[in-house]
Image (cartoon, rainbow, N blue to C red; front, side, top):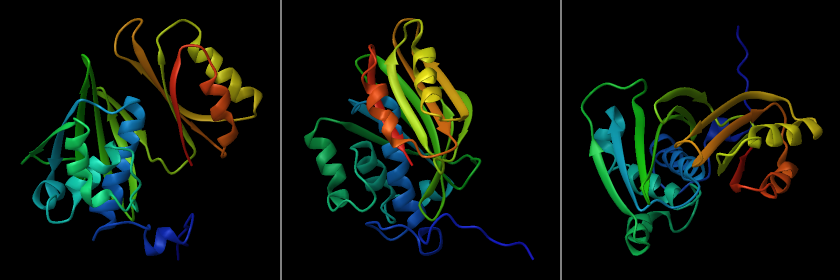
Length: 221
């Protein structure tokens, strides 16, 4: 008989959250927060394309407020999550929900297209149960991020040497890179690195933030 493996008790009983469903609420909030981290700041507007189960029940299960709460930087258990749509309006963030009828890779799928000052970012995420998520697309590039391993997401100016500087810091601290995704808006503009490492490395964040031309660094463990 195959032995099931769990990283924590929350893989069994689910996450601490506000809302009725770990997939539709906790997972959705995590997707929103990760996408906010990739973008590096609050967008002026966001188009949210919902697929299959998300498209059918996003209002009833609170998926809409969870996704927007995540975009505002909220955790799934944030007491203000239920007011996220109102807070987004007060902060000047326009949100458009677009339910889609076509099939998706997973029944709990969402694609967000964020806009600010001429910048656009497209990210697709899936809520796979128990509050766990996967990021499967970034600006049209197919990727596979489970966010279940230690992950750094950086936003920096696209200048020569940035990738080498970041990887040198990771190497000096003994961090082994599992996967690395790099993309940019255009030459010389903002660029993104998503780096999964084998072991937790929270202490590296401050070193990365201190680099010239680095805008934001977020770490997920």
